[in-house]
Length: 357
Ligand SMILES: C[S@@+](CC[C@H](N)C(=O)[O-])C[C@H]1O[C@@H](n2cnc3c(N)ncnc32)[C@H](O)[C@@H]1O
Image (tube, rainbow, N blue to C red; front, side):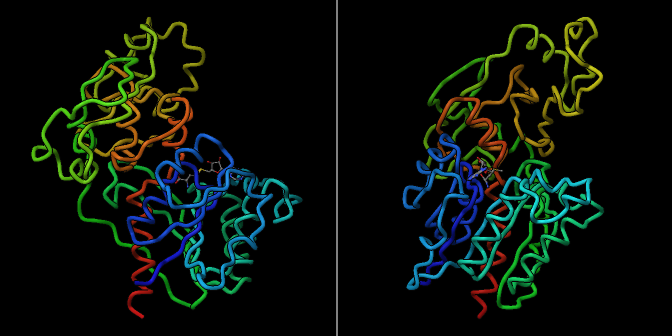
């Protein structure tokens, strides 16, 4: 059987990679500078070679095995430099764009059949779309046919309203079409109802699920797969005042439902984002799980923040995915990830073109 060799650049803990593997890619190599994220990656992808290093120091020559060409290079470089109000810096020589240039360097040298570049949706709005056009042009210069769009994770079986910008390119001139949304949505209730009941500050490495497999939602059954217990039931400890605030917030409400007397010492209420102190709704997909501890996202029915396993479920990481590092690093790794089921849908579509040939 043909092996579809993949490389994951800026891999984080591996959300994109695990989705790609579910679709049928064999991810052989990954590059990630952050130690905890790289450890998580290695733990869950034992057959891949991880380079825990600054990508700028990595020689692409190491990845050019002639007997096993690379099918896909994928990754989401951090791209702060794209916000360029000043026309003087609006070009690829801006040092802030160096991470994007690294991605281009890999595609240019290795010339994979396909590439998948993902990023924040805001990239399409910068400079009235000029930045996006500039990125497309970089890949077109290399001979790739490029298509890009914004996809919503909740359209692809992920219980979360999170969007992501994808640019897909191939060097065979294929007119790629993005996958169509599924005709159903998965809710927070579907995602969490079989997980253990927890309290503020709990830290249980392993607990039984709260209901048997057969009674769990179809989504929970997919996430559980072969897992017999719920692992990494770690909840950040909030102080009593914060827990008191949580008690006043109903599903779907946010910080604005907290009585004024409980917010007196809140530093800057005027600048509260609408998803600060948001209690999730059981019957809807979740709001974005970016850094769910910092934004104080609240469990739908319990007065506490989300556990690692709950946040991982909302991102569609399977239950056997284990995260490494201190709790705050784990929370960041989960929040940074491309939801695996979204990645799976996009990459299955890419593979469908190859399988027709
Ligand atoms: C948005 S996260 C990637 C998430 C990942 N695609 C996933 O689905 O889990 C971007 C990653 O780029 C890594 N990174 C930033 N600068 C880097 C560099 N110079 N070399 C390698 N990795 C870098 C960060 O540590 C971070 O984990």
